[in-house]
Each structure stands twice: as C-alpha cells, then as structure tokens.
Length: 313
Image (cartoon, rainbow, N blue to C red; front, side):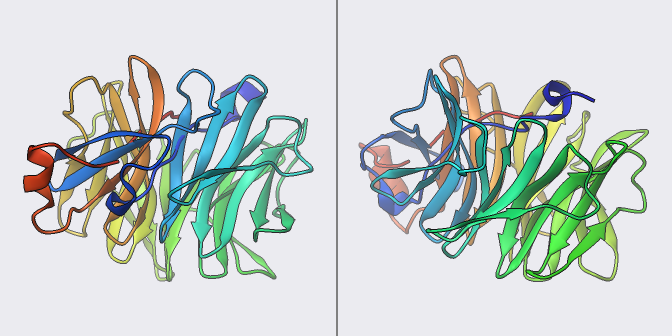
C-alpha cells in the first residue's frame, strides 16, 4: 500500500448558500430542478482546483490546491481563510467536516495521515489507538462526535467514532474490504463499505447497519453526508460519477445534466443546502446547491443570481 493508491484522498472545493450570491470569488449560478447552484473557486487556487466537502450554517469547508500543495479552507460568504495544521508537511492539510465553529479533517505528516480538529485557535491531533502507521482520517462531525476511518497495521480500513474521550470502531458486517465512515447527524452515521461485489453506502444508527445502493448505480454507491433524515453522496454509472440525495424512500440524482459538467460529487448537507464539487473542461470546482426562496426561480429566469463548483480519490 503506498501513499498514491490510498492517500491524498479526495480533493478540491467551496461555496455557500443562495443568500451569498454575488460575493467575491463566486462565479455565476444556475437553476436546475429545485436547486440554485453556485460555484466557488478559492482565489488563490491553482488551475481551477477547489472542492467543497462540509457545511454548517453559512460556513463551507474543503480544500484547494496551489503551487505549494493542498490546503484546507473555510469560506464564510465574503472571504476564504486557509487552514494549515502546523504539524503537517508543507501543503498537506485537508478540511472535510464542520459542526458549529469546529472544523475536522486530516493532514499528512510525511509518513501517514493524522486527523485534526480546529476550534478557530487551536489544532488538536486525532489518532485512533488501533491505527497503524498510515494513520487516521477525520471526515465528519455532529455536536461533539467526530467520525472517520483509520488504517490498521495491515492497511485494513475501519470506521471510527470519537466522542472526545474514547474511540469506537465501526465495521459493517457485510464488509470484506473496508468500512469508511464519512458523515454523522445526531445518532446516525453514514459512509460506505466494500465487498467482493463492489462499493455500497451504509447508514448506522446504533442498532444496526442499513445498506444503501442507488438503483441507477452500476459502479458503486458512496454515502458522504447526512442532515436530519436526508443522506447525500454519489454513485457511479460506469466510470461517471453522479451526486444523489436519499430521503429514506427515493434516490434523486443531483446536478447531473447541466451543460459542460462531466461528473458531480455531493459531499455534505446542512438542512436543505448541499455542497460538493464537479468536473468540467477547466478543472475541479466546489459548489453549493440551495433551495431557492419562493419566486427566486422567476428572478433567475430573467437575469439570475446564484452560487457553485469538485474531485474524487
């Protein structure tokens, strides 16, 4: 197992809600289905490489790439702030989740990953005691509980939850090749696992695991985030990625047919606002997809304001 095949994870992104339209660094928006999409490109990103992964309130987190490497960011509607863990190798910090004012993610220290939490002033390292050298990756947070996954000494992958004092291991009973915890809302954790047939999403409520397979998927289903009873993620149709939402009954494909978009990956959700990233001919871009206020679609049809912009590992 080397850093390139298991490492660096997924990359690039940012954006915020429809109310944040027309701010600096946000390019034009568009309405599709019931969402208004807005692109966010960090102004210091190199060659269109920004990706949004988490959202809490009006703050979006993710990471961008520049000539020196990868850097986490938070975006508050008017400005970007870079996030660089002081223990990270230069250009090796990735932000993935946020709850309130606390950001979680991971950094590369030269030999492996370590998770972190950042409260606005202090970075705290997270390392599951069962992790091997390759390390611990923090992906999501709800309240004071952080979830993610770690690599054991044999490079096997296991999910974890951390309540601030102890780690709990998550292994989907159907998994034969790894369990990856990605998001949490209240007492429900979502992620994906791998078996001999491929990749499947899961939801874990404490009483058991539920498998999530988008019926349109032919190349795997990945659950990344949850808010209330709505789960978001992406599925593959062949080699092409598509975002989805799942309300417990129906899967809905997200941002799939806009002109120029090659692939879409929905990574996070807060209320009715989605974040993620997409590919087009120019590169990778973060996005925010918001449900418009009544009458907004009519305004958009005659001029438009809005907000949006991806990568996958």
